[in-house]
Length: 371
Image (cartoon, rainbow, N blue to C red; front, side, top):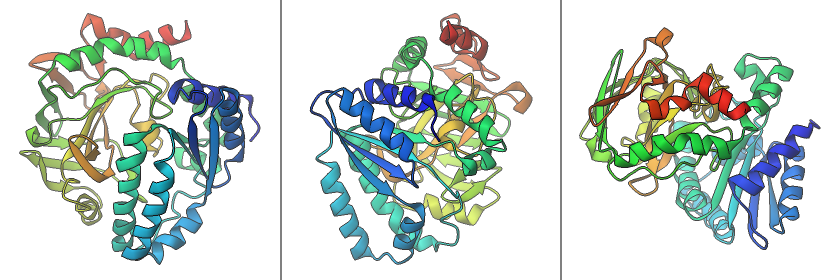
Protein backbone atom coordinates (compact mmCIF):
# COMPACT_ATOMS: atom_id res chain seq x y z
CA UNK A 1 0.00 0.00 0.00
CA UNK A 2 1.72 3.16 -1.22
CA UNK A 3 -0.11 6.01 0.42
CA UNK A 4 1.36 9.48 1.08
CA UNK A 5 -0.44 9.53 4.41
CA UNK A 6 1.98 6.84 5.66
CA UNK A 7 4.88 9.30 5.49
CA UNK A 8 2.86 11.92 7.36
CA UNK A 9 2.02 9.39 10.06
CA UNK A 10 5.61 8.13 10.30
CA UNK A 11 6.93 11.68 10.71
CA UNK A 12 4.44 12.28 13.53
CA UNK A 13 5.37 9.03 15.30
CA UNK A 14 9.13 9.66 15.11
CA UNK A 15 9.16 13.37 15.89
CA UNK A 16 6.23 13.57 18.34
CA UNK A 17 5.15 10.19 19.71
CA UNK A 18 8.63 8.90 20.58
CA UNK A 19 10.39 12.28 20.00
CA UNK A 20 13.59 10.61 18.75
CA UNK A 21 16.82 12.53 19.19
CA UNK A 22 20.11 12.29 17.23
CA UNK A 23 22.05 9.17 18.18
CA UNK A 24 19.12 7.40 19.84
CA UNK A 25 18.35 3.79 18.91
CA UNK A 26 14.84 2.62 18.06
CA UNK A 27 13.67 -0.96 17.56
CA UNK A 28 10.86 -1.12 14.99
CA UNK A 29 8.85 -4.35 15.17
CA UNK A 30 7.15 -5.06 11.83
CA UNK A 31 4.49 -7.79 11.73
CA UNK A 32 3.36 -9.68 8.62
CA UNK A 33 5.19 -7.69 5.95
CA UNK A 34 4.14 -4.12 6.77
CA UNK A 35 7.14 -3.04 4.75
CA UNK A 36 5.82 0.35 3.59
CA UNK A 37 5.37 1.45 7.20
CA UNK A 38 8.85 0.11 8.00
CA UNK A 39 10.42 2.10 5.17
CA UNK A 40 8.65 5.32 6.16
CA UNK A 41 9.56 4.93 9.84
CA UNK A 42 13.21 4.18 8.98
CA UNK A 43 13.42 7.25 6.74
CA UNK A 44 11.82 9.48 9.38
CA UNK A 45 14.16 8.15 12.07
CA UNK A 46 17.26 8.64 9.94
CA UNK A 47 16.21 12.18 9.06
CA UNK A 48 16.38 13.18 12.73
CA UNK A 49 19.75 11.45 13.15
CA UNK A 50 18.47 8.39 15.05
CA UNK A 51 19.47 4.76 14.44
CA UNK A 52 16.56 2.48 13.43
CA UNK A 53 16.73 -1.30 13.81
CA UNK A 54 14.09 -3.38 12.03
CA UNK A 55 12.74 -6.64 13.46
CA UNK A 56 10.55 -8.63 11.02
CA UNK A 57 7.95 -10.90 12.62
CA UNK A 58 5.16 -13.25 11.52
CA UNK A 59 2.00 -14.25 13.38
CA UNK A 60 2.08 -17.64 11.67
CA UNK A 61 5.65 -18.34 12.76
CA UNK A 62 4.90 -17.03 16.23
CA UNK A 63 2.01 -19.49 16.44
CA UNK A 64 4.42 -22.34 15.72
CA UNK A 65 6.74 -21.12 18.45
CA UNK A 66 3.91 -20.92 20.99
CA UNK A 67 2.52 -24.35 20.11
CA UNK A 68 5.86 -26.05 20.82
CA UNK A 69 7.15 -23.75 23.56
CA UNK A 70 8.47 -25.04 26.86
CA UNK A 71 9.34 -23.18 30.02
CA UNK A 72 13.01 -23.41 29.05
CA UNK A 73 12.52 -22.22 25.47
CA UNK A 74 10.34 -19.26 26.51
CA UNK A 75 12.83 -18.22 29.15
CA UNK A 76 15.61 -18.31 26.53
CA UNK A 77 13.43 -16.31 24.10
CA UNK A 78 12.74 -13.74 26.80
CA UNK A 79 16.42 -13.37 27.73
CA UNK A 80 17.40 -12.73 24.11
CA UNK A 81 14.59 -10.26 23.38
CA UNK A 82 15.07 -8.46 26.68
CA UNK A 83 18.84 -8.13 26.17
CA UNK A 84 18.26 -6.44 22.82
CA UNK A 85 15.45 -4.26 24.18
CA UNK A 86 17.59 -3.00 27.05
CA UNK A 87 19.96 -1.50 24.47
CA UNK A 88 17.21 0.61 22.86
CA UNK A 89 15.99 4.12 23.60
CA UNK A 90 12.63 3.68 21.86
CA UNK A 91 10.28 0.99 20.60
CA UNK A 92 7.69 1.11 17.79
CA UNK A 93 5.51 -1.78 16.70
CA UNK A 94 3.32 -1.99 13.58
CA UNK A 95 0.88 -4.90 13.80
CA UNK A 96 -0.44 -5.98 10.42
CA UNK A 97 -2.61 -8.97 11.19
CA UNK A 98 -3.34 -10.89 8.01
CA UNK A 99 -5.67 -13.15 9.98
CA UNK A 100 -6.91 -12.11 13.43
CA UNK A 101 -7.67 -15.79 14.13
CA UNK A 102 -4.10 -16.99 13.61
CA UNK A 103 -3.83 -18.08 17.24
CA UNK A 104 -7.10 -20.05 17.08
CA UNK A 105 -6.72 -23.53 18.58
CA UNK A 106 -3.59 -22.91 20.63
CA UNK A 107 -4.08 -24.71 23.97
CA UNK A 108 -4.80 -22.33 26.83
CA UNK A 109 -1.80 -23.52 28.83
CA UNK A 110 0.54 -22.72 25.92
CA UNK A 111 -0.96 -19.24 25.55
CA UNK A 112 -0.64 -18.70 29.29
CA UNK A 113 3.04 -19.68 29.13
CA UNK A 114 3.69 -17.34 26.19
CA UNK A 115 1.75 -14.45 27.72
CA UNK A 116 3.69 -14.71 30.96
CA UNK A 117 7.05 -14.20 29.23
CA UNK A 118 5.69 -11.76 26.65
CA UNK A 119 4.24 -9.73 29.52
CA UNK A 120 7.64 -9.63 31.26
CA UNK A 121 9.20 -8.32 28.05
CA UNK A 122 6.50 -5.88 26.96
CA UNK A 123 5.27 -4.52 30.27
CA UNK A 124 8.47 -5.06 32.22
CA UNK A 125 11.00 -3.55 29.79
CA UNK A 126 9.55 -2.08 26.61
CA UNK A 127 6.93 0.25 28.04
CA UNK A 128 8.77 0.82 31.31
CA UNK A 129 12.27 1.69 30.09
CA UNK A 130 11.79 3.11 26.58
CA UNK A 131 9.82 5.69 24.66
CA UNK A 132 7.24 3.59 22.80
CA UNK A 133 4.34 3.66 20.36
CA UNK A 134 1.97 0.93 19.13
CA UNK A 135 0.39 1.09 15.65
CA UNK A 136 -1.97 -0.98 13.51
CA UNK A 137 -1.98 -1.47 9.73
CA UNK A 138 -5.05 -0.93 7.49
CA UNK A 139 -5.34 -4.13 5.44
CA UNK A 140 -8.09 -6.42 4.14
CA UNK A 141 -8.27 -8.48 7.32
CA UNK A 142 -8.64 -5.38 9.47
CA UNK A 143 -11.34 -4.03 7.15
CA UNK A 144 -13.28 -7.30 7.22
CA UNK A 145 -13.25 -7.43 11.03
CA UNK A 146 -14.37 -3.80 11.14
CA UNK A 147 -17.20 -4.43 8.67
CA UNK A 148 -15.83 -1.97 6.10
CA UNK A 149 -14.42 -1.99 2.61
CA UNK A 150 -10.64 -1.74 2.57
CA UNK A 151 -10.81 1.73 1.00
CA UNK A 152 -13.20 2.98 3.67
CA UNK A 153 -11.07 1.42 6.40
CA UNK A 154 -7.96 3.15 5.08
CA UNK A 155 -9.70 6.54 5.18
CA UNK A 156 -11.02 5.84 8.68
CA UNK A 157 -7.57 4.70 9.81
CA UNK A 158 -5.73 7.82 8.69
CA UNK A 159 -8.54 10.18 9.74
CA UNK A 160 -8.32 8.86 13.29
CA UNK A 161 -4.53 8.47 13.40
CA UNK A 162 -3.20 11.60 11.70
CA UNK A 163 -4.65 14.13 14.10
CA UNK A 164 -3.06 17.18 15.69
CA UNK A 165 -2.17 15.41 18.91
CA UNK A 166 -0.32 18.41 20.30
CA UNK A 167 -3.62 20.31 20.22
CA UNK A 168 -5.53 17.32 21.63
CA UNK A 169 -3.07 17.26 24.53
CA UNK A 170 -3.84 20.92 25.24
CA UNK A 171 -7.57 20.20 25.17
CA UNK A 172 -7.16 17.23 27.54
CA UNK A 173 -5.02 19.14 30.06
CA UNK A 174 -7.96 20.42 32.21
CA UNK A 175 -9.29 16.87 32.58
CA UNK A 176 -5.87 15.61 33.63
CA UNK A 177 -5.57 18.49 36.09
CA UNK A 178 -8.92 17.53 37.60
CA UNK A 179 -7.92 13.87 37.83
CA UNK A 180 -4.66 14.84 39.56
CA UNK A 181 -6.72 16.55 42.28
CA UNK A 182 -9.24 13.71 42.58
CA UNK A 183 -9.33 10.92 45.11
CA UNK A 184 -12.59 8.99 44.63
CA UNK A 185 -14.20 8.02 41.32
CA UNK A 186 -17.69 6.56 41.17
CA UNK A 187 -19.30 5.17 38.00
CA UNK A 188 -23.02 4.48 37.67
CA UNK A 189 -24.68 2.95 34.59
CA UNK A 190 -27.06 0.09 33.80
CA UNK A 191 -25.62 -2.93 35.63
CA UNK A 192 -22.80 -0.77 37.02
CA UNK A 193 -22.11 0.85 40.37
CA UNK A 194 -18.44 0.88 41.20
CA UNK A 195 -16.08 3.15 43.12
CA UNK A 196 -12.31 3.35 43.52
CA UNK A 197 -9.45 5.72 44.31
CA UNK A 198 -7.09 7.39 41.85
CA UNK A 199 -5.36 9.54 44.47
CA UNK A 200 -1.98 10.75 43.12
CA UNK A 201 -2.22 8.29 40.19
CA UNK A 202 -2.90 10.57 37.21
CA UNK A 203 -0.07 12.01 35.13
CA UNK A 204 0.06 14.86 32.54
CA UNK A 205 -1.77 14.25 29.24
CA UNK A 206 -0.07 11.98 26.71
CA UNK A 207 -2.36 11.99 23.66
CA UNK A 208 -0.56 10.47 20.69
CA UNK A 209 2.50 9.47 22.71
CA UNK A 210 2.12 5.76 23.48
CA UNK A 211 -0.23 4.54 20.78
CA UNK A 212 -1.90 5.69 17.61
CA UNK A 213 -4.78 6.45 17.35
CA UNK A 214 -5.21 8.23 20.64
CA UNK A 215 -7.90 10.21 22.38
CA UNK A 216 -8.14 9.20 26.03
CA UNK A 217 -7.22 10.29 29.51
CA UNK A 218 -6.14 7.20 31.41
CA UNK A 219 -4.53 6.45 34.73
CA UNK A 220 -3.83 3.57 37.10
CA UNK A 221 -5.97 3.16 40.20
CA UNK A 222 -5.15 2.21 43.78
CA UNK A 223 -5.65 -1.53 43.17
CA UNK A 224 -7.22 -2.55 46.48
CA UNK A 225 -9.68 0.39 46.42
CA UNK A 226 -12.11 -0.94 43.77
CA UNK A 227 -15.48 -2.19 44.99
CA UNK A 228 -18.71 -2.85 43.14
CA UNK A 229 -20.02 -4.21 39.84
CA UNK A 230 -19.28 -3.08 36.30
CA UNK A 231 -21.09 -4.25 33.15
CA UNK A 232 -19.71 -3.67 29.64
CA UNK A 233 -22.01 -3.10 26.66
CA UNK A 234 -19.40 -3.37 23.88
CA UNK A 235 -17.69 -6.54 22.59
CA UNK A 236 -14.03 -7.09 23.42
CA UNK A 237 -11.69 -9.07 21.16
CA UNK A 238 -8.84 -10.36 23.32
CA UNK A 239 -6.46 -13.29 22.94
CA UNK A 240 -8.26 -14.62 19.88
CA UNK A 241 -11.74 -14.61 21.45
CA UNK A 242 -14.66 -12.19 21.03
CA UNK A 243 -16.14 -11.57 24.48
CA UNK A 244 -19.59 -10.05 24.93
CA UNK A 245 -21.92 -9.24 27.84
CA UNK A 246 -18.99 -8.95 30.25
CA UNK A 247 -19.65 -8.28 33.92
CA UNK A 248 -17.07 -8.01 36.71
CA UNK A 249 -17.65 -7.98 40.46
CA UNK A 250 -14.85 -6.54 42.59
CA UNK A 251 -14.23 -6.61 46.33
CA UNK A 252 -11.27 -4.79 47.85
CA UNK A 253 -9.68 -4.59 44.42
CA UNK A 254 -10.02 -8.26 43.46
CA UNK A 255 -12.26 -9.52 40.64
CA UNK A 256 -14.26 -12.09 42.59
CA UNK A 257 -16.65 -12.92 39.73
CA UNK A 258 -16.26 -12.56 35.97
CA UNK A 259 -18.96 -13.64 33.52
CA UNK A 260 -19.42 -13.28 29.76
CA UNK A 261 -20.43 -15.34 26.75
CA UNK A 262 -17.10 -17.18 27.30
CA UNK A 263 -16.95 -17.28 31.09
CA UNK A 264 -14.52 -20.20 31.35
CA UNK A 265 -12.04 -18.70 28.88
CA UNK A 266 -12.35 -15.31 30.55
CA UNK A 267 -11.45 -16.71 33.94
CA UNK A 268 -8.49 -18.58 32.49
CA UNK A 269 -7.14 -15.23 31.27
CA UNK A 270 -7.82 -13.54 34.61
CA UNK A 271 -5.85 -16.32 36.32
CA UNK A 272 -2.69 -15.60 34.29
CA UNK A 273 -0.85 -14.31 37.37
CA UNK A 274 -1.47 -12.98 40.87
CA UNK A 275 -2.28 -9.43 39.69
CA UNK A 276 -4.41 -10.15 36.63
CA UNK A 277 -7.59 -10.04 38.76
CA UNK A 278 -6.77 -6.49 39.84
CA UNK A 279 -7.39 -3.31 37.84
CA UNK A 280 -4.50 -1.64 36.05
CA UNK A 281 -6.22 1.32 34.37
CA UNK A 282 -9.28 3.56 34.33
CA UNK A 283 -9.69 5.77 31.26
CA UNK A 284 -12.19 7.97 29.43
CA UNK A 285 -12.21 7.95 25.61
CA UNK A 286 -12.97 11.03 23.51
CA UNK A 287 -11.63 10.64 19.94
CA UNK A 288 -14.47 12.29 17.99
CA UNK A 289 -13.71 10.37 14.78
CA UNK A 290 -14.17 6.94 16.38
CA UNK A 291 -17.91 6.50 16.79
CA UNK A 292 -18.47 2.75 16.71
CA UNK A 293 -16.51 -0.35 17.82
CA UNK A 294 -14.50 -2.18 15.15
CA UNK A 295 -13.25 -5.19 17.17
CA UNK A 296 -9.81 -3.65 17.61
CA UNK A 297 -9.10 -2.48 21.15
CA UNK A 298 -6.50 0.09 20.10
CA UNK A 299 -9.32 1.97 18.33
CA UNK A 300 -12.33 0.98 20.43
CA UNK A 301 -10.79 2.23 23.69
CA UNK A 302 -10.49 5.76 22.21
CA UNK A 303 -14.11 5.85 20.99
CA UNK A 304 -16.00 9.01 21.91
CA UNK A 305 -18.32 8.75 24.94
CA UNK A 306 -16.67 5.56 26.24
CA UNK A 307 -14.60 4.50 29.21
CA UNK A 308 -12.52 1.43 29.92
CA UNK A 309 -11.75 -0.35 33.16
CA UNK A 310 -8.79 -2.62 32.62
CA UNK A 311 -7.85 -5.84 34.41
CA UNK A 312 -4.12 -6.44 34.61
CA UNK A 313 -0.96 -4.47 34.22
CA UNK A 314 0.10 -1.14 35.52
CA UNK A 315 3.87 -1.21 35.86
CA UNK A 316 3.91 0.83 39.08
CA UNK A 317 0.87 -0.25 41.07
CA UNK A 318 -0.06 -3.62 39.57
CA UNK A 319 2.56 -5.39 37.39
CA UNK A 320 0.96 -8.22 35.40
CA UNK A 321 1.48 -10.14 32.15
CA UNK A 322 -1.91 -9.04 30.80
CA UNK A 323 -3.50 -5.66 30.16
CA UNK A 324 -7.08 -6.12 28.99
CA UNK A 325 -8.76 -2.86 27.99
CA UNK A 326 -12.48 -3.70 28.18
CA UNK A 327 -14.56 -0.83 26.82
CA UNK A 328 -18.10 0.30 27.59
CA UNK A 329 -20.12 3.15 26.08
CA UNK A 330 -22.00 5.72 28.13
CA UNK A 331 -23.76 7.20 25.11
CA UNK A 332 -27.44 7.80 25.79
CA UNK A 333 -28.56 5.35 23.10
CA UNK A 334 -26.42 2.66 24.80
CA UNK A 335 -28.12 3.16 28.16
CA UNK A 336 -26.14 6.15 29.41
CA UNK A 337 -23.93 6.46 32.43
CA UNK A 338 -22.49 8.88 34.97
CA UNK A 339 -18.94 9.48 36.21
CA UNK A 340 -18.36 11.33 39.49
CA UNK A 341 -15.08 12.80 40.78
CA UNK A 342 -15.13 13.25 44.56
CA UNK A 343 -18.91 13.36 44.45
CA UNK A 344 -19.16 15.89 41.58
CA UNK A 345 -20.77 14.77 38.31
CA UNK A 346 -18.24 15.35 35.52
CA UNK A 347 -19.64 13.23 32.67
CA UNK A 348 -23.22 12.20 31.90
CA UNK A 349 -24.29 9.97 29.01
CA UNK A 350 -20.81 10.22 27.54
CA UNK A 351 -20.66 14.03 27.54
CA UNK A 352 -18.59 16.17 29.89
CA UNK A 353 -20.80 18.57 31.84
CA UNK A 354 -18.24 20.88 33.49
CA UNK A 355 -17.55 24.03 31.46
CA UNK A 356 -13.76 23.51 31.60
CA UNK A 357 -14.16 20.02 30.07
CA UNK A 358 -16.75 20.58 27.35
CA UNK A 359 -14.07 21.02 24.68
CA UNK A 360 -13.57 17.22 24.91
CA UNK A 361 -17.10 16.51 23.69
CA UNK A 362 -17.23 15.29 20.07
CA UNK A 363 -18.47 18.32 18.15
CA UNK A 364 -16.41 20.82 20.15
CA UNK A 365 -13.24 18.74 19.75
CA UNK A 366 -13.76 18.35 15.99
CA UNK A 367 -13.96 22.15 15.66
CA UNK A 368 -10.77 22.60 17.66
CA UNK A 369 -8.77 19.94 15.81
CA UNK A 370 -9.94 20.99 12.36
CA UNK A 371 -9.18 24.63 13.11
